[in-house]
Image (cartoon, rainbow, N blue to C red):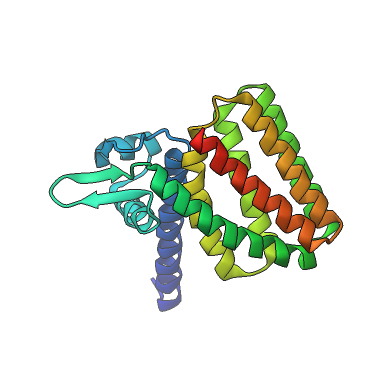
Length: 223
C-alpha cells in the first residue's frame, strides 16, 4: 500500500470513528430528552450498547460528552446515572433561557429569511399534528427541532452551542408536562406568536413572545 493510500485509509477510519461517536451522542441524547431513560436511573453500559446498537467506544465518548452537558452524572464506583430533575434546577434553567433565547430572537429578527419562516411554520404544523396523534415522542423531537432552528437562524455559532445544551435540558422538564393537552395547545400558539414577531421583523414583539413562551413553560412545571 502506498503512502497516499495508507493516509487515505487512516483518514477514512478516523471519519468513521467520528461519525459513530456523533451517532452515539445523538441517539443517547434523544433517549435522555424523551425520558426513555428515566431521571435518577443508573445505566448499564452493555444495555445502552444494545439499545442504541453501537459499540463501547462511541458510547463511552457519548457518556462523557453528555455528562459535560449535565444530562448524565458519572458516579465513582457506581457507574452512570441519568441526572435527576428538580424544581430548583428548572427555575435556574428558566432564568438562563430568558436571557439566551431573548438574545436569539433579537438576532434572528435581523437575519431570518422567507425560507426560514416557512420552515418554522412547517415545524409548528407538524407539532400540532403530533399533538392530535398523541405522539409524545414526536412532540418532543419536533419541539427540539423548532428551538434549534431558531438558534441556527440567529447566526451566532457560540450562542447556538449554548442553546443546544439548554434546550436539551429543558426538553426533559417539558416531557413531564405533556399529560396536559391544553398546555400543548398553548405551546403551539406561543410558537406562532414568536414566528409572527419574526415575520414582522419586530424585535420587541418577538422577544415578548419568546419570554411569554418560557414563562408558560415555568407555569406548567409549577402546576
